[in-house]
Image (cartoon, rainbow, N blue to C red):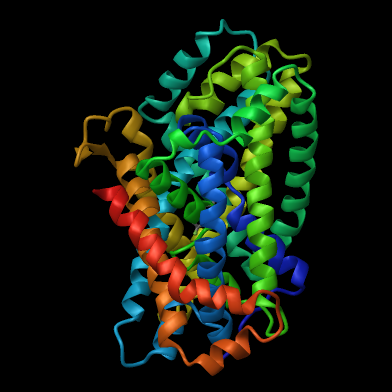
Length: 440
Ligand code: PFF
């Protein structure tokens, strides 16, 4: 058997994993979820979820992946040959394909808006022209499908080149660029007159806003944002070197991911408040509200290009990581070439992605349990499958695996005792309670 690939450097491993975590979840979803769910209250619960559930579940995934150096099903089979644990691998693979399908629709919108911004067609409309523009684009019978497919093709081209020349190299270039753009943007926004209100909105928790629903959303957001519960990080950790410290990597990744989410809020809300807009616009915030602002801003075109560029960089490094789950599974469990596995992944995502893309137009009347396919995939994966995966991984590593093996994996790193305590007790109980409470 040929030697299994590993990330070349620790920097490369961190860049790729942060690339997975930092995505639309941070820059598109976090600001609008925070905007709709009480700002500071949401941020507070979110931070709590990252510490008591996010980091422990991440470490659990890392232990499984790094100790076996295999794809999710192979890893679970190796660690627990006589149990049904590997079935959770299939759940993870299904969840990753569901996420990839609806995720690439939004990525497709981003590519369209990037092209509009670069070609100067995003400026010069009347304020209410932007809502009409977005609705007519999103409900168009084929344009969103085309952009979704184009995005998946770009994703395919990176993945085909393999771990080192594709994923690691792309992450090493894209992630530093993303941080530079984000910092420039946040500084610019914080100098706007609405900055104080924005900081207040995001940072001051109004406790009366904390409800079970807000808690469920914050937890779903933490899982989604950290790419947890569906074995994405397990797969990346299977490419980590044995010398990497798992708790240190997890802490760095969770910190950077949270930092980007907060900075995205600080980049978007000052502009929203300065130009007299409302923060509750939901998923359409960046497509309908921000272009109105760019239209009035000095050098608005440049800021529009930077924003959509930022979103593009963030989203493609995440979609790559979701795809790697099935690619690793197919190449290792079914012995097919990386190229063929990448094509299968892209093919499935193009079919389901197109159906999700049409949820805003011709298929908007097609609903299951009152949700369009796009909303259903989003809800089932983020609010149901990821938390269930999180409970499974923390119980599996916390209780089922040999303690000596787990300790050996975590031997050189900070916070080990706290992380193990949270993994065994706090995370499963907290995830299960928020999950059940929120669904009632
Ligand atoms: N963490 C990504 C984001 O915040 O956009 C989304 C994501 C990536 C979810 C990879 C799941 C995953 F496996």
